[in-house]
Amino acid sequence: MTHLRGKKPPISRDSNALAKAPAPPKHLSTYARAEWKRIMPGLLERGIITRGDLGGVEDYCRARGLARELEAKVRDEDGNIDPKMTRLQDKAMQTARQLAAEYGLSPVSRARVGSAATDDDSDNPLMVR
Image 1 (cartoon, rainbow, N blue to C red):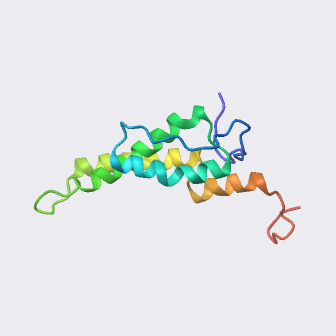
Image 2: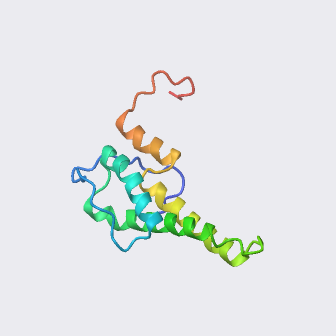
């Protein structure tokens, strides 16, 4: 069994990367479709998304969309916070964060994507040689 703890392998351009963004799936919510349209140009530009990755991207967008939809339901009519809705929203945000890391949508994972393109550490004073 392999574990992905510690240093993650760098993400690199895929030879089968999509060149054009497919339309967002029609069954996605309005928020999820908006997220699809927001992230797809960057994913295509980095050349890391293939047709096989679209399910994972869809899952990420669904989780982000759900977190946004639950925002309106966290508080009831009296302004009280509903703990059940807060837990649901937290789980959706956690899932979205995990999936975002898979596709270089967080600052740390973007740095991994960028490190695959440039490997020049000559100006890094903290580089151990």
